[in-house]
Length: 97
Image (cartoon, rainbow, N blue to C red; front, side, top):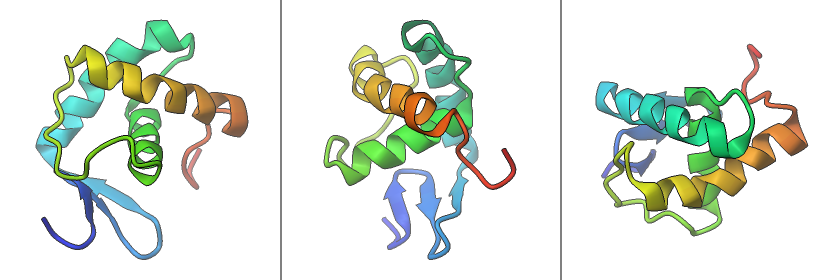
């Protein structure tokens, strides 16, 4: 894993900007669909990515863990963080929002 890779296929540079691999994009999209109903918010891939970063920083996701969009346990791990993104930040996750 590269130094700037916080999860497989998720990279954070020194400015705090994230880039993802094509494969991770598919995972984020699937997770957004899975999280939307239980979160009660219009979840998109940027919200899922923010939730993943929060979960890694809290020590709740293993940086080497392979992620699958249909993993119910992963959905439950990310759900409180997705809700935090909306509750505390109004769903705004980037400079362009």
